[in-house]
Amino acid sequence: MKWPTHGANPQFLYKALHLDMPETVIDFSANINPIGPPATVKNRWNELFSLVSDYPDPTAERLTGLLSKQEGVRKEQILVGNGGAELISLVGRLLTGKKVLIVQPAFSEYEEACRVNQCEVRYHLMDVDRWELRIDELLVSLREVDAVFLCNPNNPTGMFFPKHTIEVLARECARYGTLLIVDEAFYDFIEEYESIVSCLQHCENMIILRSMTKMFSIPGIRLGYLMANEALLAKIRESKPHWSVNAIAMKVGEWCLSESDYIEQTIQLIKKERERLQSFYRDQEFSYSPSNVNFYLLKDTKVSDPFPFFRFLMEKGMIPRHTMNFPGLDGKWLRLAIKGENEHERLLEVMSAWRRLDS
Ligand SMILES: Cc1ncc(COP(=O)(O)O)c(C=O)c1O
Image (tube, rainbow, N blue to C red; front, side, top):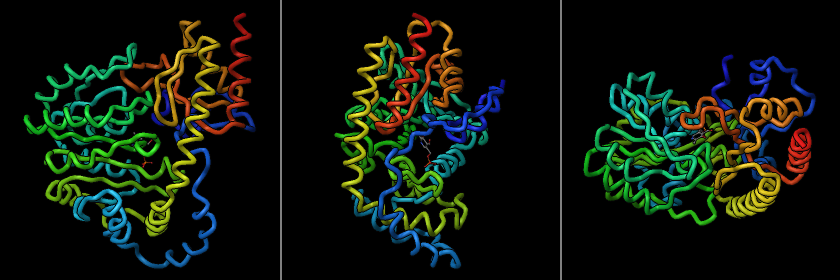
């Protein structure tokens, strides 16, 4: 069977499993803010129509200026892209033919972007039994490669490595001339996030990737940005299609940057729901990853074959993300997004029904 390579678009998963898609489903396979886009986006939607007939600003000057203020870096250090996904593929191009280490399990696009650019791909596997990075071994392995990808907060585990860990990695990468790429697509879900942007000052060889589609619930619009030193960024920019970021995405992005209350409300909602789910899972003897963000890994410890559990959830319209293409997980876990109270009422009913089956 050919498993879909990403979450979202659940029709492909049902098709692959030869299952009929129920009329109502809840998609836990995409890690998007359950609140939906900020109210401003809806309220000002009509203003976007006036942008449709002009070419977008290929330099995204206004948005870049706002990001530069927010992050405390020069405009020349920021590249706005058509989602984090476009920026990852540009980084892949930069790495053509190089040796690249990917800290796994991680977002599958890193490997995809490297392979199409003839990179030699190596893995550093995190210890998912202990939920540890195994940093000592990572520090040794990164000496032997040209670049290392770290997803932090980590997709799919939801774990977060603090600034200190990144500083240690950045220092070691600087020593050996290894490019460190830190994907912070979910950084804004971390309650006590401490910015690593200052590392760019000491580390020439560092790229920080951000997505705006998760927190602001705009995956259909596509928006992300990358930060690096000016020379490196200029090189990455060379391969970017001229108008790849559309005018609507840029304008929505500008609005989203002043939504600090919305971010805080999201963080609190996710925290409350995460604690509620974890309490249920503990009582019912499911295992879960120590997530700090809006998704987590889940496993039924009472069964050895995870597939019937996965299929049961799908049949009930609760769509998890399979982990078949996450090295180190190999399908043993399921990844689920954290959503709102109503969705979780339904999810926990279905989980309870599953538990009753084996009692
Ligand atoms: C870790 C990570 N990075 C980057 C992306 C790309 O996000 P987008 O292209 O929607 O900005 C994703 C999407 O799921 C992701 O999980």
